[in-house]
Image (cartoon, rainbow, N blue to C red):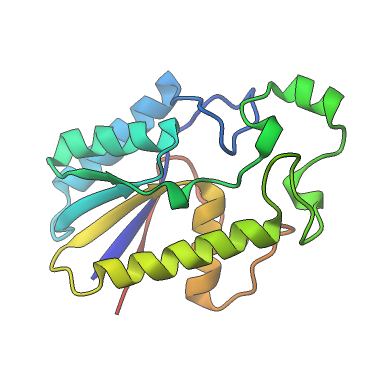
Length: 185
């Protein structure tokens, strides 16, 4: 069985993402439509369900794919991007003025966004969610899609490849509306 991890399409990069409610941009919608067409035209993907983060940019991505391939969407809020607390959806310029130097890659392991998560809390949430998700879908006859976020996919890939996760590096970068398959035994 394969779980296809898909990063949502492009959203508004003038705001801080994380738990932002920003939808896809027109470019992002186009990216997802192109990906949907590839999925529809590919032989052997055999998708039985689409799971998605409940943040708007991921849900919108999942819904576009669902419409193209006629597969139901199931929301899983545990696969949200890092909780960036009060910075979620804040304009980048304002965030730089109000919280100078506050960037994910500069955090200590236990340092959290104001009102948000630390790298440790984020990783533990994703590791737990991924373990539970694998148990839930084990034995399912069809492959599945999980639409989520770049940081989440990086954490999952670290788990799958046995690499220690760190917020300081991103060994598994993924572009918007890109898909990678993870084989689940």
